[in-house]
Image (spheres, helix red, strand yellow):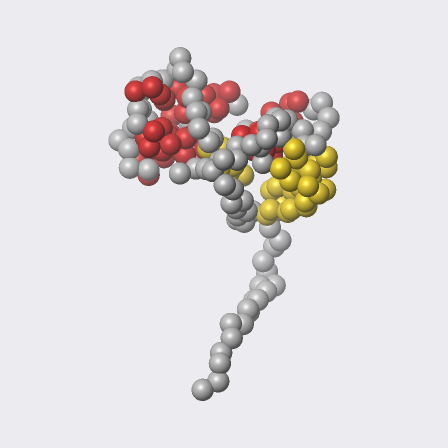
Length: 184
């Protein structure tokens, strides 16, 4: 018997249009503020629609600072971050605000405003960006096996229920990019 090796086959469809770039890191270097921060040196990455990038980290590393750089909330140590072909540099805060409205995020650890109930927390980003989407929240809750978005305070829900609500919040408004920090 002859050994058979795997062969990659690429089929190009002539009518397929190129996928839009969603996230691009150019000569990106990041050093967080703590010894447990994620660190990267001189990387370049292009992520297009429908693509996934996974970074496997030891449990001791903290992801929040790095993810905030991808969302334009803080600057990288060096290089640039582009979201949908726009960088986060400069002072066009209205554009940055609009860009962030197209990003869903599931946080590692605590992700709730304590004096709001979970439903208000889930709706907060949408309201902040001028959208009213209560029916969409209910639909996502049902897709995740919940009867409704919880009206309870975060302190009164199990961590697994809070995590489901983070997913609901992240999927609201059809995000162009999902940032998932230890999402399970």
